[in-house]
Figure 1 (cartoon, rainbow, N blue to C red):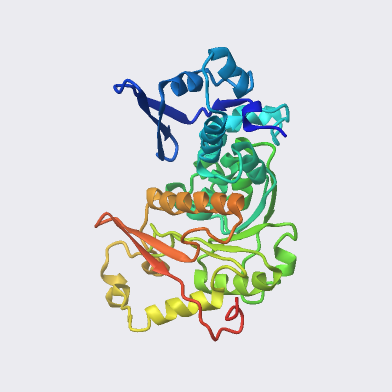
Figure 2 (figure 1 turned 180 degrees about the horizontal axis):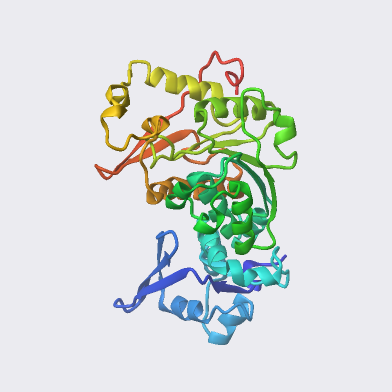
Length: 383
């Protein structure tokens, strides 16, 4: 039976090792995961530090031990290397090629090293491969939706469907990362597709200029091979568009991510609607309804007489909420790392799946709002 000592290992590139050798007989060794800042400490014989320094993946551990001429207790050695492997400190070097094309390794190597620390149950290469074989549908190519598409394309997403009916305007340049003066008047989906293909010519992209309405036929709109739908369409209202999507996707066992970063909540996160795991979209809508039942907004625009202004503002602009590109980037960045984590983990223990967070910029604090499951819900009351 093959022992772990018969395998070839090396210290992972994303691991720093700190050695405190001030004590003569024993030494404290700390492994620091650069990407996640996790610290793992052990106390061992000084000889262990020499073994760790020699780990290059060229020879099996047992050969390294024999060459050093040290006498190790085999059980202790097995326990040590089993522990280091379980803690993702060392990686086994095998003859099996990684599940990713060689020409892509250089492009994604830094991210692969990050995934190696970030996920315990898969290697960085396996995590990257999952992204390369995933297709997402993004509804809404506005400031948040386009940034999510851009970040996931840079991360190595395999395919994407983009749905948005609008064209770029001069005002789009402020908050849309892909917008320039050269594509004012161009459909958003067309300009975004060209932008993403400049980042990664190998990504597969389909587009649609459809407007999501209560009567939209989602069977004809959403590609059949999509793995996750992301909704950033805030017109006529993101709650309405999300309800339509959530009710459609739930029986199909397809997850939905409702993005944040809209209206007055420009620095908010989104939440997942995942069949069998989170509350359904109706429960989430009910949660918001209950939380806001005593909130009665008034609009200052109702009291403004545009005729008294020297340069009257367009009537519809009164309902526009101010925001910046940096705020949109916050929401889209949080969404992107959450979506990547979901794609790679695909388990039922992901934190904050059905919570919406908001960064209060004036206070420098983050608040969280949990979606509540309605036990009497006809859709997800019994999970």
